[in-house]
Image 1 (cartoon, helix red, strand yellow):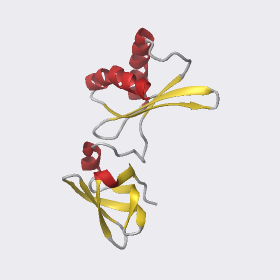
Image 2 (cartoon, one colour):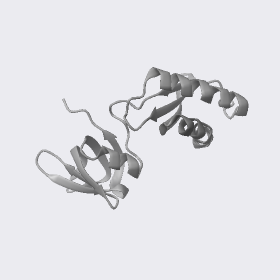
Image 3 (spheres, helix red, strand yellow):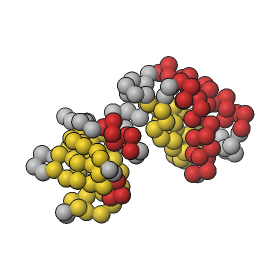
Length: 152
């Protein structure tokens, strides 16, 4: 499956570059009896709309038809990552400074493996997350998953 996502990354990147958009994530997975190819896109302002998604979908679909890298039938979905956007690249963490994040770590840090709060800094591969009662420094290597979080 990673081969499919690698090929799709190569196909969609020039399209996104031309449109001033960025690739957040590609997911290729089976749900029930159907396969889904999901491409999550964003821009600097986080204001992806249906027209952006439709344009990328149309252009990517054309490229996928030309190259035909996926032997089975699938559904193509292009969308924004939503309010709880995953954070993976260093640039994602830099953009998230000052915002609310949810981090899970591979191993517990001081007995905890889930941290949620304001990302107050990101420097030299280290995040500083201010939770309600404490502030925690977490390295990129310690992170299992990271995403933006909504505060209610």
